[in-house]
View 1: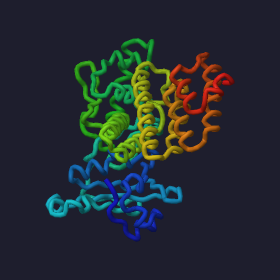
View 2 (view 1 turned 45 degrees about the horizontal axis):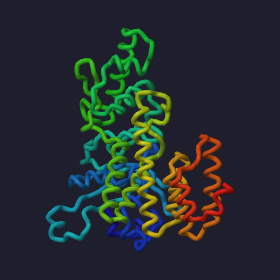
View 3 (view 1 turned 30 degrees about the vertical axis):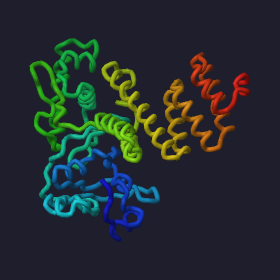
View 4 (view 1 turned 135 degrees about the vertical axis):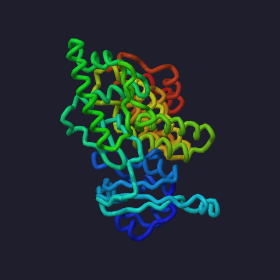
Length: 369
């Protein structure tokens, strides 16, 4: 969605003039976050989902980034233009977004949105425009139960498996009592917040976190990256870049980063890390094809910081620096990277990387590396 109208009130509140805001993607101007810190505005945000369904939406308080970088507190609500009007004027606005004083709530709205689960970076929950302060829950093991279930989203998890993950070595009776208490606490918390009934469903001796009752940022992240690559393959670089940038805004850190050594989430963490690197490859390609070589180089560096062994990013970094006219810088980057690769991993660059380096920088520098 793009901004098609911008009034004086919005300009005063966020600092962008109408000329600066109009034509921009909504998430580029309304850089909003739940009060608990999770990202609110993205390609797959609550507001956009409701607009797509023709429904109103409201968040009573959130943090929005002002043009000068400061965070302000405000409320957001939407009103969808009737479809009949849009059919008559297909190029006109599809919805009106209102920025209000924090705390205002539309009395007609109910908790129609699914529970939103943020797994990338700091774990968080939100529903119907309100962040749930899970860090302050009395029973933190209930949060851990939810993390286990979200790692197996839509699939039944036997209670014995949960007990083994949560309390390894405990006897079955005591483990079952603990699990029942925490499941009950978790369901009550979610129900009180407005989540759908049976968000966590019992099937025999197993529990399922229903995929139709929740929105998970990791799933949205994967969808955006896939959409970006589809657009890129179709030759739509601008749309692809927008999808990749939206995905980047969701990737606030590794999957369930506070559980780095747990086997039950290790496979999903590694899968999402690969998707993240795939996203960076797409972003670098988009920037390079648009002639934004500095931005492309920055993306390549971010990827190499994450995984120094990804030589494709090193080759792309060299190409982008050479395109910027920074041949000396490219040579320096290569020498530093090669030295670190040898010291940290005891390996040397592949022949392909050496060939690219020779083509871009020159054969005479290779022997001195």
